[in-house]
Image (tube, rainbow over all chains, first blue to last red; front, side):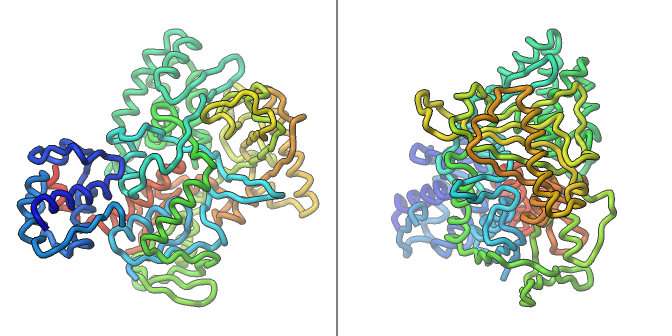
Amino acid sequence: MTEEEVALAVKDIIQTVAPDEDVSGLDPDVRLREQIDLDSMDFLDIVMELRKLYGVQVPEEDYKELATLDGCVRYLHPKLTSKSLHCAANA
Amino acid sequence: MDAIVIGAGMSGLAAALRLALHGKSVTLLERHSLWGGLNSFYTLRGRAYDVGLHALTNYVRPGTRGAPLTRLLRALRIRHEELCLVEQNGSEIVFPGARLAFDNAPARLAAEVERAFPGQGEGFARLSEWVRAFEVREDREPPPSARAVLAEHLSEPLLREMLLLPVLFYGSAREHDTDGQTFAILFRALYLEGLARPDGGIRTLLNLLVKRVKQAGVELRLSTGVRRILVERGRVQGVELDSGEVLSASIVFSSAGWVETLRLAGQSVPRADHGRISFLESIWVLDRPAHALGHRAATTFFSLDERPAYRSPRELVDPRSGVLSSADNFGPVHVGRAEARGELRVSVLASHGAWCALSADDYAVAKERAADAAAAAAVAVTADFRPHRVDRDVFTPSTIERFTGHAGGAVYGSPRKHLDGTSGIDGLVLIGTDQGYLGVIGALVSGVTMANRHVLASERSGAAEAFA
């Protein structure tokens, strides 16, 4: 996956977890929490989808890396280079 | 398997779905051949009926932040539009000499209070603020009496009775009064958020949940009753089915009720914990929509007395107060569709003991008579719908007990609630009515919250920090 694809994958997972939210206009360097009504359970859902779809384990101490969309891409890209994009929302 | 869920009602479906979305393997057991529990549906003489007051409380528009409905849909990954919710066209509370209308805009009720009870508007505004600020907390006892909360804010006794009656009828397991927390939850659900109905009735919602539950990989077993909950040294081991089959799991969620769950686990609970509130419900199929007869309220809470008695009556039924609800009064009213059928349901308090004491012959006659008495009371507050009867079905506390397994037909369960879901037995978690959230939305929230808390929360601490 390219960085753009990782961003797509993350947005797609957020869309799955929060089906009523519009994720198309997310600002990449503003905290997700400030743009979308997500709580800690929702966040856990996102981490769980990453594991289910891409086999990526995010240890608890790294959760803070995922606070923004840019943060997600920076953190996840190295782990996803060899993976191909799935569409969770359409699964 | 990871978890067993007893009962495929709203709370059981929600708990099973929530766990399965997190990759847990779940078996959902339902004694009946159909899902739904206290909010189910059936077909009789070719007509579709719903069970229960048929409206969803807590209605908010899509995307309303922080609201229970929004949080719930998120947790179950359901889009708002999938519920096909249609808003009420307004409801009313009718007492001798006073009438209050309310709808999904809270300002309407505030204005009605000031109109009908000049000078009480300010107290009502303070009460609404108190409710908005109320937090559900497990670590302290809620205010013991809703009546006391009302009296702190409103000096007019009739107004207090009028605001309390819908709250009691919508979900109080306790007679005469309810605690401050139940009051706050239901006040918000009814008056500050509001009512809506899935187009097509409760089956729209139930069938959506069942579809998702199956897609998520839950094993749903219908016509599968639980004979015993297996406990060893204070810890749950699994369940034994009516067939004798044993299923093992380290956690069991039970929506059977507090009294019923403990009974399945071989323990008994004090008599005072048994719920007594039950209803006689008559569903009238009419030859035209209720609004064509001049009955325009989605829900009418009525009392023929200034001080209604909310308790299990000494007689079979107490028709002097009750609830009228009509599915016809949600969404656009199509004038000129006179050929369409209508529906009006009348719910009044009923005594389980009195109904159980009847012989089979007397029971059938008493049922029709009690439904007639309830209708006679209802037409004191609305148009006479009786000549427009096409069909009618009536159910009693015995019917409720038979189909839901709730002891004594106690629709709102035990007066003792268990907000944290704990049962005193490790790994046995209460969900649904006796966990303590109320109504259709409350039951779903109960399933989700308890699944989060008792299974998923262990993974959660870091998430809270990173995301705060």
